Amino acid sequence: SQKIEQNSEALNIQEGKTATLTCNYTNYSPAYLQWYRQDPGRGPVFLLLIRENEKEKREERLKVTFDTTLKQSLFHITASQPADSATYLCALPNSGNTPLVFGKGTRLSVIA
Amino acid sequence: NAGVTQTPKFRILKIGQSMTLQCTQDMNHNYMYWYRQDPGMGLKLIYYSVGAGITDKGEVPNGYNVSRSTTEDFPLRLELAAPSQTSVYFCASSYSRGTTDTQYFGPGTRLTVL
Image (cartoon, rainbow over all chains, first blue to last red; front, side, top):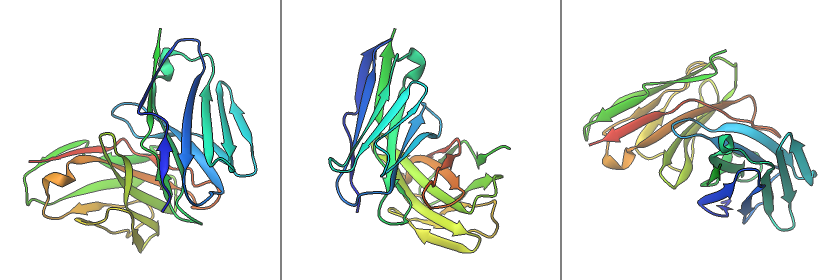
């Protein structure tokens, strides 16, 4: 089954810098990959979806890349703010049309 | 729309007790899911349903049961609660399990089994 690795459990950055989070997968190459945000005590909230034929997708300060050769997605938050502090999860289908598999997440802390 | 609602928010059970976690969505989504989230372990899929009357096992189904009699409701039943079932439980729904499968999550139920 699909195995997902997110680069680190925790990432601390200074306000205003760009945060870069990594999601690597090991097996089946998915048709798409998603990123979610989870705040403490709350359920995950969908942020972005990127398809296998899209190299990059942007939405305001967020940018996601998808490299099917490296089996990797990068999630960037530019001009980071303390309000961006949260856990970010990547998710992709296990195989074919199966339900999503979620990574363990990276806890981002933006320090003012 | 309320989205996905879950009750209760918190519950403490004694070993061997049973309970039902309720989940309701008002978005007319076909697909519904139950996850558990343990600290540092990510979301694990327990059961999912592709429509009323149809359910299937996920990664960690042992000790749980589900039913889906309506599109809106997807209750999760714990029989003979064990300390290993202490976790936060999230219900989610999605319109389809196709090229988007964007999932909408409820606020979670924090369950402690003592």
